[in-house]
Length: 379
Ligand code: GDP
Ligand code: MN
Image (cartoon, rainbow, N blue to C red):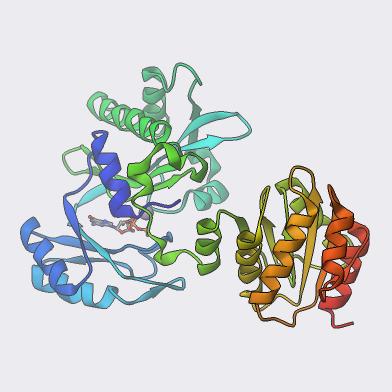
């Protein structure tokens, strides 16, 4: 789950990271009011889930509340990389002499939470990694001891902050960001840019926090911040139906129970020359309602030319899923061809139930994939 910048900065502020004063606005008039309460120049920033808003014209400075209102009227409603701006953050504008990059991520190779810092802030870190990899410092935290003070200071020295007071402030911010990451079960906590002001102090101007969906149940306060407006409709529906669904670009819709089987199904579809339209795990014990929701989600994708069911009955009984498919088909209108391979517990009963339906039966996974690929091609 992604947090908006205005939510991320509130989270960072709770950990003592210096963020600018500001507020959110959904109308130009509100933006003006926030600017008035700040008093002085402000920056008006589009709140959409993409980076590079600055370059896209979604971040603009305004000297007066009137200007803030005018700039907000330009940004609100504009489209950035396909997303419509519905909210802006109006924040105190800061003048600075330098931009720094700082983040906490999970380094899967090191199997540790890792801090990344670069003296080349303001641009995307992937860009720095490509053009000037030596400008990036990485330090991994110990899994039990956390990020130690000397490590935080090493980060500071590594990016050239040699002034004692400044290095100390940077180290404090790095330690706080590390705690944000760990205590919110984040997958990314990033400040870019972290700027150095004329008086030498540091200030976070932009932040980004991604949360691990699997750990959200531990953070009801953070889960409540979810903004579904930018989430693809299908993914939203899948989450509500408790299905794991990832849209892909192919033409063969896959409905499978179990994540491993779903991946194997996608591989076999590709082996037979097809491209999967999705990854979908309907999970164990899927009854009619789940199958129906899954089918609707798959068929809502206009690219889908055939649907392939691959069900392995273990604890989930095949006949139950077959009844779910038949019941779902009664309620979902479609002429997209469908192939079913059902095997495992109660498979004979399952096949008998499906025999009366229009599903194309397949005895093996290979046969199912071959038939689905042919059906998608209109053969
Ligand atoms: P992003 O492009 O989506 O990463 O959005 P940012 O919030 O990082 O803004 C992009 C750029 O706008 C920053 O790198 C800064 O150069 C500039 N910017 C943002 N806030 C301020 C501010 O308060 N003062 C000044 N002078 N520039 C700012
Ligand atoms: Mn940024």
